[in-house]
Length: 418
Image 1 (cartoon, rainbow, N blue to C red):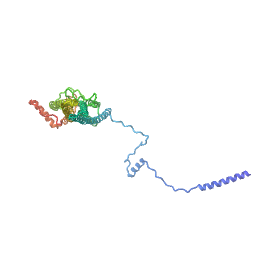
Image 2 (cartoon, rainbow, N blue to C red):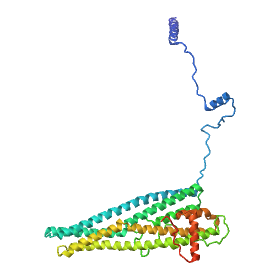
Image 3 (cartoon, rainbow, N blue to C red):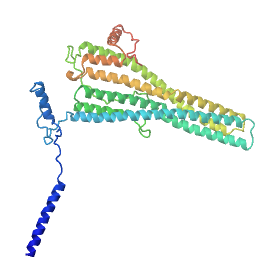
């Protein structure tokens, strides 16, 4: 009985505690309010269409979920175009390299010229002072210093005359210009049409021909500065022209018989006047450069020998001072006047006219006229390269033809640029 009373007492007490706890935990109800839910883009578009009264104004995009993958876009760049772009990058790099090396070699010419002249004039002054009654140790010091300076100037002149820094700088300037021209040609090809394998081959051959014509290193590959005979520069790949196909009627390329005869007359003028004149001037400049290149070190060597005998007679000092002054004068005339640069300029000009002759011959002798340039475009290109208008080019061809009939020599050059 006692256990039943205790259990009933515990049950009643637990009920009363749970009632009190529920009363303490209960809280007042909060007011209800709605949070705005962002609308999806599709539902927003639908509402706009319905609000404005349109049913199909804005198209609804389906399959916009990320699990729907888009089809890959095929690249339109062909293999030939990719190769041509690779050649374009290489040509751009060549332009920068030749430009930098050209500036460096131009600095060589200026620094060596000033240094050698200062050394030569200093040695001549020492030889003159030593001959002015100096005896003993001062005489020996002045003689030795003068002889050493003259000897150093002789060696530096031999090296400078061998490499011709002014000519080296002109070579790099020409290479920079020609690589820029090739760069523009490749860009134009890529812009106007889809390139072919022949375009890639042509660009590659032109790049390698320019590398061969204007090498960057000095040792082993440097262009000979004093050849036996003056020859024009060649920076283009040699092409074998097809036998000429006689056509007097208008072709698909607009190359008529009259245009062909006009171009042949232009070639004759280039050969007889422009090319011949630049070959003559180039040979003259080369001979002058050879004489100066030999005279400078020879005079400096004579001055070194004369300075070694200063104090044994007045003639030694006279020889040393006079030869030193002449060596400095010759060096200034050769490298200050940049005779080597003049020789290279004539080589480049003679090469330009040789290229003109070959390109015109190749164009008018092509077997397949459909692959030849348009006649009018070809004529305009020739006129622009010669610095003439179309009417002036035709007048030149007429004068050349008349000179053949009259048996006289035309007194006009084909080019008006140089």
